[in-house]
Image 1 (tube, rainbow, N blue to C red):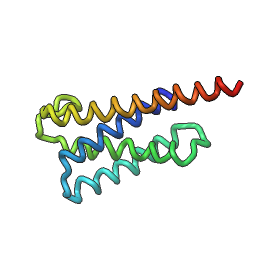
Image 2 (image 1 turned 180 degrees about the horizontal axis):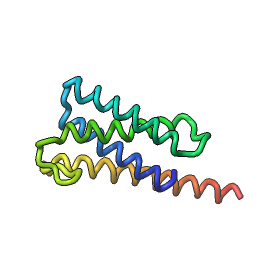
Image 3 (image 1 turned 120 degrees about the vertical axis):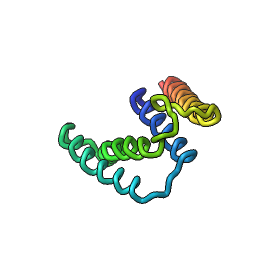
Image 4 (image 1 turned 60 degrees about the horizontal axis):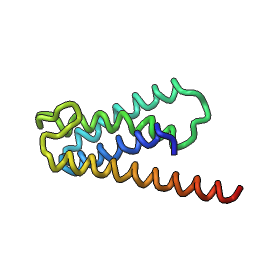
Length: 119
């Protein structure tokens, strides 16, 4: 897995942790997020080279959805940048990201060891 994709997965982990702690079932948040996702996702698709495949296109729509819904969920909750003022939430988000990166690095190491052994 490329370093850029690891960062993107950490963004998703951080986002999902925030949604878990601050979920708001108000349909307006999610409908607005879908609308922004469609508009910005389509614009991003037009701006990248052809042949990106399903996952690249999915990410182009997921990113604006995540940004807009994240903004709505943390509004008025004293977040600093993307960081919750609640230490437990910070710990959970950071721990999940660190755990994910550790797993990726472990698999990378094992994959390289297997490939070296095959030569």
